[in-house]
Length: 225
Image (cartoon, rainbow, N blue to C red):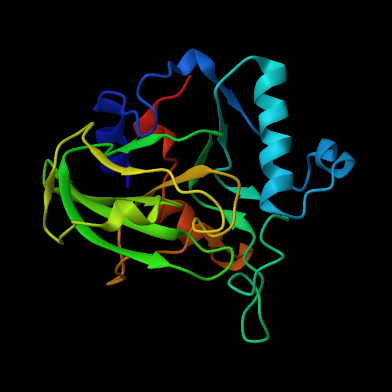
């Protein structure tokens, strides 16, 4: 693990959404259960969150809100993807979200090849998703891009080469994107565990230790200050 973190620290910053927007126009967004400000708002639907986030961006005069890594959220309670009679509740987010209420282009964080892609259509799921495989200095890992547009999957083939900074997708809108306010879910995955087109982006407290190691902080690549 230390070798991977050292590698990420050496890599030049990657931008995965709306490359024309400078990091100075980003702001952290706390959607955790400990944020008492959220209790002042009715946040039940994608539209509710879209309005809430737009007001947050406007009031701070910025373009993109980001955050959510290892964040416990109530956002997932509406979906049986995260809790049903057979499973424990999953509510700890293990990727990084980039929220922007406008059409946006999505880029590969690094050079690699398309590992897999699919449309995860359940309510609250990723919607259209692309996973890219990378190998640097004999270290293999993956990046996942979730909540994309359906058009993002057209013309893709497993094994296609992509360059760092190459456009791979466009941002999806609700309900296609899993029925969320528009945002990119970006995640690093070391061991993909033979999964294709999908990988957990939210975990349970019981397996947080494993996922926090297998899915290190995406900001190690983005380097948002």
